[in-house]
Image 1 (cartoon, rainbow, N blue to C red):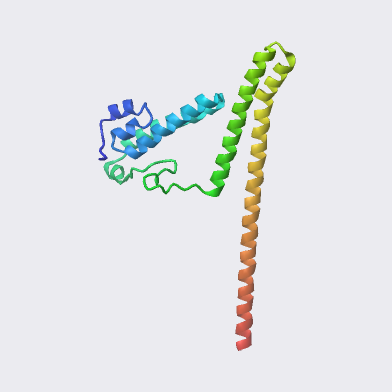
Image 2: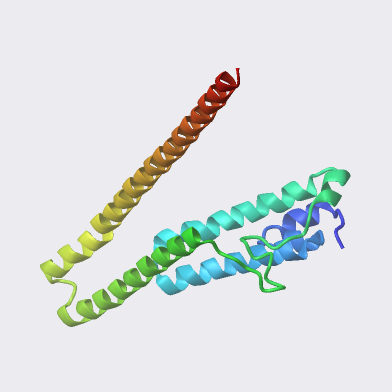
Length: 198
């Protein structure tokens, strides 16, 4: 049952993602934040990719402010808030979780990149154990993979995103242009019909 609670205890409990939401009765929201935070921590731990640490930290901060903002709402808005699962998991109870095709592709690419990075780390650790860290070729490869490859991947992703935006804008303009041409043809046809009738 949703209920406004003591702001001090809400502040203290919201220091753990999801606990503040559960304290106010938003169980589904609280569970979503808690599981999301734990899953992101597990991903960072398993993949050993330090850059991914930004994800659980961002979710942690968002959860904290989200809970305190809900607690600060007036009574009318507070009661109007719905307790729903977050991150597209609202259909989890009746197994209707749906992911569109574009999201599936993005998730697949992210998973492939993470998997390749994990394999690279394992292979490099094995090579370092065999050849030793003093090998200059191994050091050069390590620093190239650590510094240059991520920059190149990010640069390619930015270029791809820009091209996708341009292509989407171009398609929208072409569709609008075709729609405008079709409307003008219909108006012209209507004028011809009216002229023929006269």
